[in-house]
Image 1 (cartoon, rainbow, N blue to C red):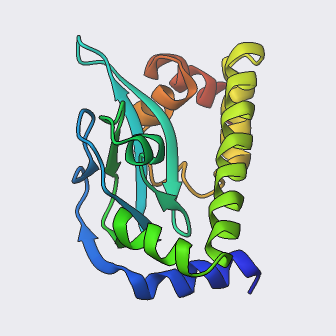
Image 2 (image 1 turned 30 degrees about the vertical axis):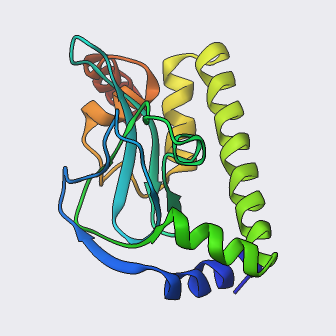
Amino acid sequence: MNKLSSLLQELEKYGTKKYFQPHQIFIREGSIPNKLAIVKSGLFRYYYLTQDGKEYTKVFMPEKNIISSYTSMVHNIPSHFTVEALENSVIVEITYHNWLKIRNEDPKWNFLLIANLEKAMAKKEQRERDLLFLDAETRYIKFLKEYPHLDNRINLTLIASFLGIQPESLSRIRKKLAT
């Protein structure tokens, strides 16, 4: 077990285990979050919702990830996105107050924070590059490599939303790749 995994496991003792059903919301857009969580099992997504009801999936968060609206939590401002369970999930929720307390008590938690912020920044930069420079088919192939087991866990509409394409386009791409 690497250092990050062992820290995540240790962090669990500061939280509360909670169970989520599909479509249950962990953080709702517009709310000011005061919590973060470790995904023990299951799958979440972050998504933006336009005023006309269109959803744009920002990221998928499977097991062994920390979910939050961190910027909103730190700055005490409303979240710009929603964090939703996509399947039956188990999390360990930690209040922001407890998170600050343990970070102040032991600097090892800053290692976990920095490692997760670096991971998130790298993913964000890669996603921006992909959306700007790659065609839809190449983005889908990268999705399959980056999330090898999620293709069977997520419906095509959500995958298309993540890729920035229409579901019909994704169906055509999948059909082409299957031949």
